[in-house]
Length: 117
Image (cartoon, rainbow, N blue to C red; front, side, top):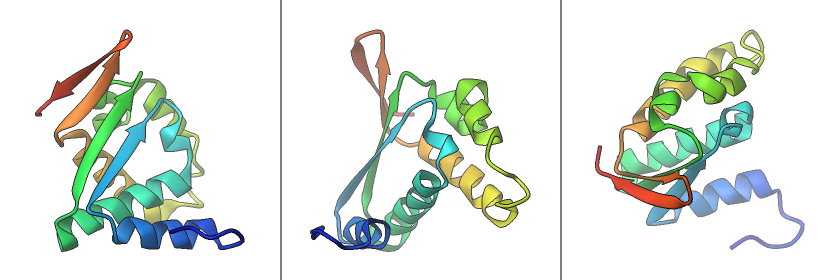
């Protein structure tokens, strides 16, 4: 549980690690946040090490754009300083690809679509 005054980034990562299920909500600007990308890597590590369920939701973004880092989603990812985050770029790309291939929910034109692949 998050307590007032705690460092939210570290505490949220601990809470994520103790959860049975994580939901990652992808939007067109998701990939512009290195914090979101690091959290996604952590979520997927928990999936592998602890068997945590992961459910991606794609809000007005195509899962294939997340998987391939193309379209508006790819544009946001490209805006990250690739020199500054050189060591992280490959793990972020791998995490985005993996998340986009999981069972997922996609928001399309005022309705949700459940996809198994």
